Structures are given as structure tokens and as C-alpha cells.
Image (tube, rainbow, N blue to C red; front, side, top):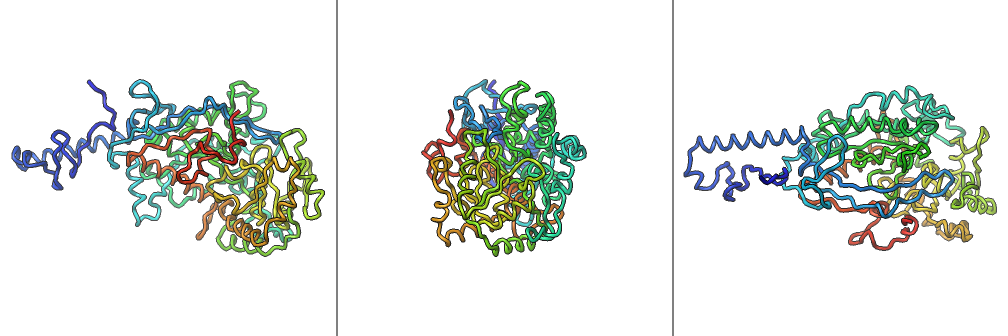
Length: 590
């Protein structure tokens, strides 16, 4: 007997065609005249009742079991490689190109293993295809969620988020045990106030406003996001209505407390446990986790350990098959992996109202900026790839550059938010080279101060924060390649070439971006603008909704090569990912 996938089984509804004869069914549910002659009213009523009961059972079974044959979008993934962390200013290495595979969605032949999130072929093997689902929209487990998106009378229609239940040891217990989070730093003061840290009152000599400013640590995104999500206006207790599923796993804090002095078993234990929990839930089986997201508030390389030896860095969380189906929110994403997305580092500003944002924007717009450019940071003498020494040398030699050199110890001015914010507020341009990895929090501090960032590698911002920053980087920043700096190109000369009118346009764009790169107070909400949290949730919801509509409409997901993950957001209409790009060599595979 031939075995059918669910997507191949005909489901008859009123107004369609009879599955045996192909004749059209009229609006009253009757078939053509042959059916009318063959039976009376009772026969037709019995037929309608049988069809209704059958469809009802099928729909209920689809959601409870997830089925996976046709309706559940399952990613067929073979992800290879990853980058090792760079702690000396050099960029992470790309994964092995020989293992980078395309990612597709096979709605017909792939079945999901509910315990691991991996897939198996119903036909026993073969390459992924773009076969699409033939089931009507109502037959999908996310049908109610899509219907809600079209309900104009529901202010949360299409925006509902369901929060996956997890024991507190996966989230809030870590905050209660804050003393164990980091071996060389007391994190308890930074985990306070919902992850904002201690308030900075009094305006600090005019650098800040009187309220809304905190001494925030750059790695508390897990807590900040969770606090905002708890108060999200469109939470739902009905997973079938949800546009996305939030998993409150503090992955960043969890791996952070095990990075030093722990073996790989300890580093991976909670990751494996959380996967077992979420993949056993019916919410997971509905889409194989493609609608799930969580925060991992460190850089992506902390979760991409390449080997199982204890000497390897970080955990293997992002290598787990189930996690590859989810969206992981990190402060630095991989240019070569599709399912982690970068969100802004926390800055010191956490506004409680639109008025607070407007007041700050007006303040930085009116500031006098005596310095053409500035740099706050330390050299990386152990890194041959770092250009920081060249930047420091050029700044020292220029009469229009202000330098703040960072150093270890209590005298470190870079550890004071007031010090570096005062520097950025007095500068037209702020130099932003790579940090210990591609990104650095300083880029967001500079934008918050209304200072135009100068980037030297696209991995620092352009290929990272594509949800939060403009696609055209020339609108808000200056790009000078690292190679140009190594060839002794004058930064001062490059910046002086920019006309005052262009400077004014860029600064105004930077100031307009401030709401999108700050995390607002969880106890209130911005009314006329979206903060970093809002932008992120909207992007996740849009991503899931597009995938669901593609499934319903019978469109297979676009096949994407992970090695070009950084490139997809920049493709113009009709452009192919293989077409040349000026940054190809910067993200090339060895």
C-alpha cells in the first residue's frame, strides 16, 4: 500500500471538488446532480456530518501531534564550522567552506523528530526539495495566528507572543545567585533594576539627564529582554494564537558563569536540558521550533565550541540541531550562520517616555563639538590584525582629535560612563574599530551621544544590526577600510572632505536612530516610537509570519547558503548572492 504524507491526502471542504469524481461542490454542500439523484436530504446531511467530523479530527490531531508531514516547516540543515573567539582584536575565522550547505524548507518529504528537532526523510533519504504543502490554511496548526494577523479589530492581531514555561533555574534563579555569574567582577549591582544596574542621578555635571540613566553592563541583555517581555502588551496563554514563542532561557548568563574553570560537561548541561524540555512541548511540534526565539546576551562565538575537549572555548548550544531551528538573539552574530540575529548592546540610557527621548535628542542636537574626531580604547599589541595602534598614533598626532586611552585598574576613565559620554558629546566623529571580536558597545554609546561613528570593518555594525540600523551605511556613518589605515591613509583628511551639509544629514540620522538602539523602561512604554526591544520583536514576528504564509501559499522557503549569511540583507532586486561584493574578501572562506 502506498504511504501518503499528510500534504498528499485530499481534504474535502464545501465549495471545493469531490475527491472521487472531480465534480464541483455547490455552496450548500451538495455535489452535482448525480449525488442529488442518488439520495435525499438525509443522505446529504449524513455526508456533511461525516466530512465535518473527519476534518475536525484531522485538525485537532495536527496541532496535538505536530504531524510534521507537510504542515510543519522543518529546516533541513547541515551547518558546518563556526568561528573561534578572538581575544586579541583579530576577527573570528570563517567556517570550513567545504561543510557549508544550503538551508531549505521541505514541506512535503521532511518529518520532524520531536525530541531533537532534527529531520528524517519519509522516503528514506535524498536531497531537500522545494515541494510545498497542498493543505488549506485552516489545516495548519498556526491557522488561528495567521487569521488574527488579518483581524483589524484586534490591536494585537498578528503580534501575540506565547511564553514557554521553564523552571526558574533557567532564568531568574541565575539573577538571585548573581555573585556566581562572573569570577572577577561583582555582577549583583549590574543585574539590579531589571538588568539596568544602579541609577546615575544628578545628571553628572550635565552629561546626563536627571532620570533614566543607569550604569548598565553590556552583557545583561537576557535580564533586560525578559523584564520587557513580562510586560509585553500582547502576551497570550494560547499558543495556537501566537505569532512567536519566547523561550525565557538566560543563555548568556548561563554560559558566562561556566566559561572559566569548568569542563565541557558543565558548560553544556543546561543547554541540553532546555532542549529536551522545549522539544517535548506541542508548541514546538507545530513548526519544529521555527517560531521560537530566545536571548543569548553574549557574542555568538561563546556558543559555538568547535570541539568537545575542555580546552575548547564556550558551549555547543548553537550547534545543537534544535537550536538551529530557533532564532537566537545575541549582541554579535556570526556572518556565516543564519539563525542568530544581532541586537544592540545596552547603553546607559533607558527612557521611560517619549518626552525623555525627545529631550535627549534635542540636547545632543544642540551640543558644541570642538573635536573633529575622537577615540576611546586601548591598543591590542598582541594582535597583528588590529589597527588600534595606528588609530591611537593618528589621534595623538592630530590637533583635532581627542584621545581617551583605556587601561586596567581603578584609574581607567573608560570605565566611567560620564567620561566617555562627555568625550563623544564633544566630537563630530567617533572612531569605532573592532573590539575583542567584531563588535564593540562603544558604537552604540557614540550614537547615543549624537556622534557619527567611523567603522573600519563591516562586521562591526553593517552586517550585524540589520534590524536596527539603515541598510545604507553611508546615511549614518563613515567607512574607512582597515587596509587603508594600514597603508597610512589619513583619517583626518578623509573626514575633512565631508561637507558640512553631509555631516549635518548624517548626524540627524544618528540622532533619529537613538530610540531604536536603546532599551526603554519595562514599567512604561514609548508611544510614538519603537525601542530596541520593539524593533526586535517586530522583526521576529515578521520573519515567522512570512514563513507561515509561504507554507500556506505553497511556496518553498528560499534556499540559502550559510557561508553568505552576511550578504543576504544587502542583495538588491535581481541580484544573486554569488555576485561580487566589495566585502567578499573580508568574509571569504580559507
